[in-house]
Image 1 (cartoon, rainbow, N blue to C red):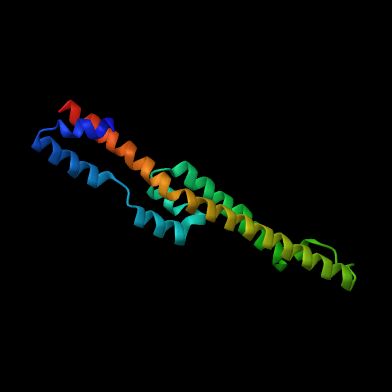
Image 2 (cartoon, rainbow, N blue to C red):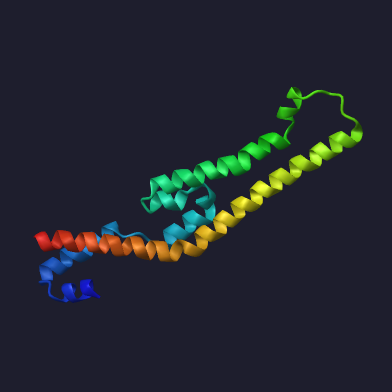
Length: 141
């Protein structure tokens, strides 16, 4: 509310500068949602929102929760094991590998959903910070 009151005290040229600068810097919810939907598990929306540390954390989480279990499920790791398994041991090992893969995918899905739920509030918060920064710049003019 403080910002709205301050905006009403601006001259018309200051208001034009404020609106131009704010519109250039603000983050679009539509773009953020599209990035979240298609690249959310890799942190694409966090890069767009100017949060590279959290984006890298999401990217690393996805690699750990998906690619490592994927490697484990494939036969790449089979070459490092002995071949004295009975058929039941191989079946159990395959079942364990699939369960690990499914667990990783479920974790990724949960992260993706939570990020989507929090996205609207996050964009609004970042836009409020941008608005405050622009107001501080206009105050100095």
